[in-house]
Length: 69
Image (cartoon, rainbow, N blue to C red; front, side, top):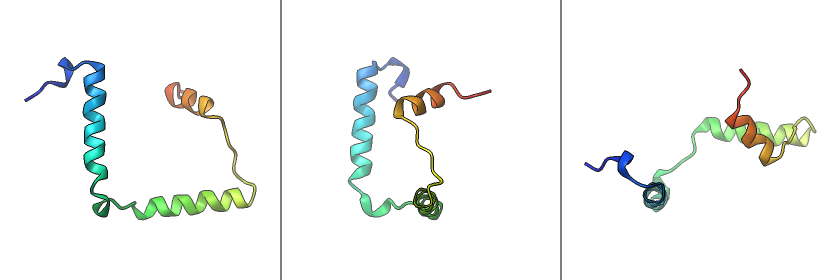
């Protein structure tokens, strides 16, 4: 079996792309869970009621990388 640790970054990215492409070909078996539809409805409702707050992608990435303790 191939050891991921021995792959270069480029090889790892190519492998991920190949896996994603393969998974994307079978759209019939991919369905969103019910909670996801509910979360989208909640977000749309909050936006329509001016209760949503937006942040820039840069701020979001920083928050994800450096979460508060």
